[in-house]
Amino acid sequence: MAGGEDDAAALGGRDAGAGAAETGVAARAYLDENDGGAVAHDEIDLAAAHAEIARQQPLTVTREVGLRPRLGFAPACHGGIVGFCLHLREMTEESAALYVVPTPLGNLGDLTARAADVLRAVAWVAAEDTRHSAPLLKHVGATARLMPAHRHNENEAAARIVAHLQAGESVALVSDAGTPGISDPGARIVAAVRAAGCRIVPLPGPCAAVVALSAAGLADAHFLFYGFLPAKAGQRREALAELRAQSCALVFYEAPHRIRETVDDLAAVLGERTLVIARELTKLYESIHSGPLREAGAWLDGDANRQRGEFVLVVSGAGPAGGSGDGERALALLLEEGLPVKQAARIAAALSGESKNALYAAALRLREGAAPS
Ligand code: SAM
Image (tube, rainbow, N blue to C red; front, side, top):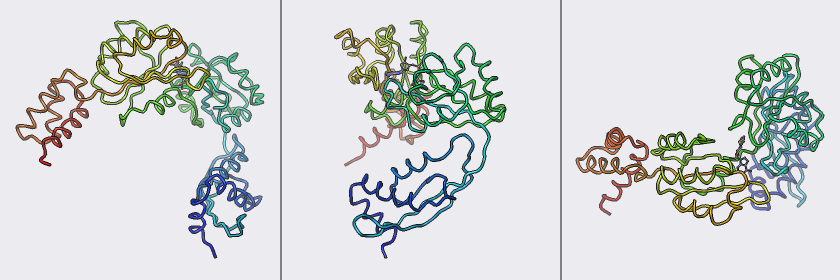
């Protein structure tokens, strides 16, 4: 008889979507009434089956307490047999929760199915701007009551949310766009809810920084999310000077009325880098421009529309030459003297104030360059 492994290989060899759908039907047929929980994992790619079945899970009153493996076989439409292994969630009654719900950045289609389910299931939605969020709730058919939870009332909102949770009513926390708590109100509310011993359930979803990074195409292995730089020029330049030696990509949010001066300051303080300007992500006039940081100001000036809308700026990290050059000069001398790479990088970083990691990477490159081929 065809086993799970054989059929998994066979599925992998065909169109993946068709395979998932076919096995999803088999999986659904296999679930009996008592297995009304969700499929959490299987040994072949059942993304479609997961989505279908997971949506049957009630949102506010259940909690996963374990995974129960169940093997099964079902007829495939080509005449063979499909084997599958489901790990069924065992659910139990659970208390109310604060759901942290990301909302679209501009494209309503980016609200996840789970986010919509949560908004429909909860008793309350705590929103940064209730007028802004009301149409979204209407769009998904949610009838939850709205309460304000913005920068200026976060503490009172937190107390009110904790009271609702303790009374057994679940609450969804949303901001105007993207993920609450990311350059948005939410962190204090989450902290207060945790301190009160109530449950917090974060949902994955839209976040402008992550969307921009996914399209930036920079080689940096790491990134630092900074959010908004200070509005005042002097403070902004100081903040940038502190970031100059960072070898990871830097991610900033910026408003249209400051984009031009911020790009000038980035170029003045950080020097030669690559800058990705991600504008109006997920919206009609989305544009993603990548080029040398020192040329970005002229690019923005090239068309008035390029300075309109919402911006994420992603700057490539400091290379070894991203600092003053002192670090790399010290490094070269120390390596010449025969110091091990790690020690040389540490001393060069201490002498120059530049990033130890960047100098370590530079030391490895210098070593490789010096090695006889
Ligand atoms: N919490 C949000 C998130 O998860 O991305 C960020 C909220 S913050 C108040 C708003 C800033 O995010 C905007 O000024 C802009 O820098 C960035 N942003 C939000 N939506 C954007 C979009 N569609 N395109 C580019 N940047 C966006």
